[in-house]
Image (cartoon, rainbow over all chains, first blue to last red):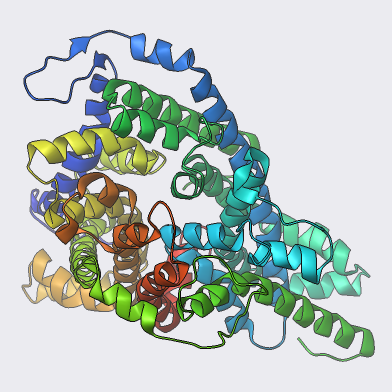
Length: 299
Length: 280
C-alpha cells in the first residue's frame, strides 16, 4: 500500500517551477522556434526581414547532394562504431567480470577515455595518426608489426581519415558500454551458471544460453543509446577533417553547423536539424519495436 | 570463483593477459599525450616515438600559462563548471522530488514530454538557442553558458534522482509531517541529506559536462577573455605549424582534474551511468 503525503495543491509546482522555467525557455521553446525558423529564408542581421518560404528549405535539403552524403557518412559511422563499441565492450565486460585480480583497475583504465574531453582526444588522435613515420600508428604498423612498408597519410584521404574517426569513436565509447554490460553481468544470479555447469554446459554454451538472454534488456538500452549518440557525431569530424576535402567527410551535424554558422543559412540549418531529429526519433522507436518485443520497454 | 584445476587456472591467466594487452593498447594514446606534453618543440612526431622523453621539460606548461589567456580560460571553466554543477543539482533534485512524491494535474504529460525530449539531439537546438542568446544579450556571457548547460542537463539528472527518491521509504517524511514540518523543510532537511550519494553523482557529471563542453562555447564566445578550456586548447592547435607539446600540455591541464574526479568518485560514476540501464 502506497502512503499518501498531504500537501497543498500548488506545492508540487513550486518544486518544479525554477527548473521547468529554464527547461522550457532553453529546450522546449527552441524546439518550437526552430520549426518556425525552418520555414523562412532567415536573416540574422537586424533590420532585414526574413521571408516565409514554406517547405522550400526542406525541399532544398532533400535535393542537396552534400546532405545525402553527410547522412550516408553518419549512418556508416553509427553502424561501425556502435557494432565496435558493443562487441568490444561486451568482450571486455565478460573478461573484467571473470578476472580474479585488479577488476577495478581494469574497469578504470578502460573507462578513462570516456571522461576525457572530445576536443583533447580529437587532437590526440590526429597526432598519433600523423603522416610521419614517427606517428604512433604508422610506427607501430611499420616498425613494430611489420604490416606496412610506407607511412600512411591517414588524414590525406577520405577512407583513411574515416579510420581515424571510427577508431576514436570506438576507443572513446567502449568503456561506457563495458561498465553497463559489467553491471548487467553482475546482476545475473550465479546459481544459473552453477546448474548449467552441472548439466554439462561449457563456457560457450553458458554464454549463449544464459549470459546473452539475461542481458537482453541492457543490450537493447545500450543499442538505442549508442545509435542516438552515433547520429550526433560532430566534434571529432569537425576537428579532425573539418568535413573536408570538399564535404567528403561531412556528417549531418557538421554540415548543419557549416551551413548555419559559416554561411549563416539559419533556415536551411533548421531544416537539416529537424530532418535529423525525425530520423533519430524514428530509428529509436524502430529499434524498440523491433527488438523490444514483449518486453516492457519502460525507459 | 575458486580456481580449482589446471585448465581453469590457464583460463584465468589468459583472461588476465588479454585484459592487460587491451589495457596497454587503450592507454597508449593517453600515455603518449603525457609524454609529448613534456617534450620540447614537438612540431612533428619524433622517430622512433618515445613514451619517456629524453630531456623532459616543463617548458610547454610555462609557455601555455604565459600566453593567450590560458590561465583565464582555466578560471573561466572552473567558474562555469562549478556554477552549472550547483544549479543542475539543486534544480533537478527539486524536480525529481516533485515527480517522485506528488500527484498533480499534468504530471504524466510533463513526464513523457521530458522523456521524449531526451531523444532529441542536443546540438539540433543550437540555432534557436543562439538566436535566443542574442536577444537576451547572453553572447560572450558565462551566465549564458551556465543557463544552457543547466537546461541541457536537467532531464537526465532529474530521472536519475527521481529513481533514487522513489527508492526511499515514506516513513521519515510522514514522521516529519506529524511533527509539523512542511514539504520544503522535509525536502531540505531529510531528503537531500539521504540523497547525498546520488547528488554527488549528479554534481560530478554536470561539472564534467560543463568543463568539457565545446560546441556551445565555440558558438557564443568570441571574446578571448571569456574563453573556456576547450576553446583555449583549440587555439593552441592553431592552423599551420602546431607545437603539439604545447597543445598537450594545455590538454593535460584540462584532463587532470577530470581524471582525479573520476578516480575519487569511481563508485558514483558507475552508479550514475548504470541507473536505468540495468534492471535491479
